[in-house]
Length: 253
Ligand SMILES: Nc1ncnc2c1ncn2[C@@H]1O[C@H](COP(=O)(O)OP(=O)(O)OP(=O)(O)O)[C@@H](O)[C@H]1O
Image (cartoon, rainbow, N blue to C red; front, side, top):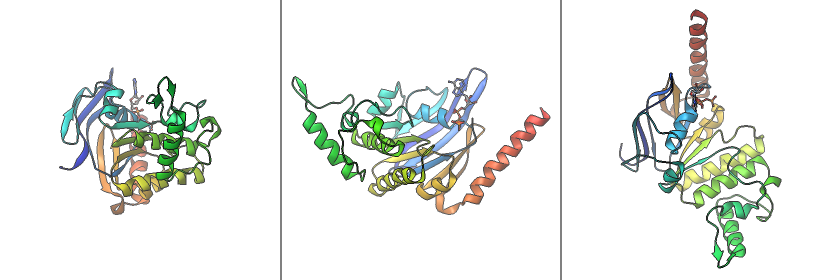
């Protein structure tokens, strides 16, 4: 399909004797938000790690903006605009919000860090993205999980990420914090510049914020529908049916 920011074509990945991904085909259009769901162990994280350059696939292609790429590392993927936001690893807790925003790309007024400029730009960017923090000089450790996640997403967008991978962005978050992240994702969607893949187990939230939903099962995408064409009942039934099948398989093994 033309206009896709990312296409994954026939991707397979084995870990020794275990086949984690068999033949994954997936696409995300520019500005689209795709929800990736699937049972525990279905291979969702493995797929994300391939897309962000951490794992090399054993077969298949990754196509970014219509060009096939061989991702050599996470940094290489990042240089192509693919970035992942992990729940816990995203930020350095001991540093301030604005230092985190500029981590590894600090603004310098030789021979010193240009703290004032970093602080001002961090404030502007966070405000622009609708992330309202009273003070960007505060240590990240003092913020809530939702605020930390929002800063991590804002940082990726600031560093020109065009394909953002969010692995369980709402896990272990209260309703208020989850709302902060969902609002941020909606805001990014409205701007239409960043394509987002979200792994999530909460299907109501997936339907709320995603344009399309893919189900990963037995190392393949077995379901691909627009969020408006499916329902919480259908998604729940798919996963329950999968659970029953695998339980029966285990019983008869
Ligand atoms: N580095 C690894 N070495 C060996 N096996 C692995 C490795 N990473 C993942 N696996 C295996 O690959 C399969 C898919 O794992 P993966 O973490 O991708 O699933 P998942 O869908 O993200 O699961 P969950 O929802 O529980 O996080 C599992 O059987 C897992 O044990």
